[in-house]
Image 1 (cartoon, helix red, strand yellow):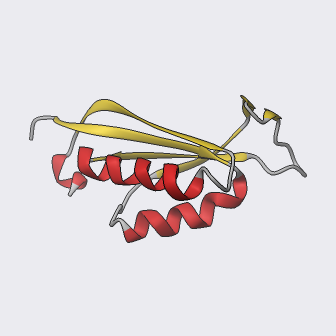
Image 2 (cartoon, rainbow, N blue to C red):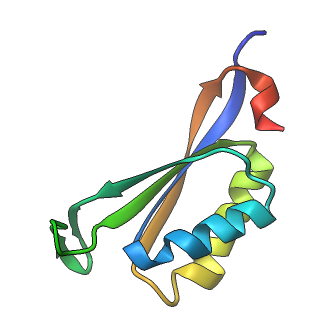
Length: 101
């Protein structure tokens, strides 16, 4: 199958949001994503992470444009008011296409 147009949604948020984000993704019928621990600097200062410090989490989700919009709207309405986070979507090409269903 040829590549199809898709969206890559990235959510970077405080470590304690991992479970609520996973729960919401399941409710939106998102079946696949990657989660990594990340460090960096943002509006809330340095987030160094470390052995005893909680790192931020980053979710990478390849999905349809409609589902990407749902995810971003949820982050804006429900996650961002309570937790430090950022979410964005970029255009990508993906294979296999059937994984986006």
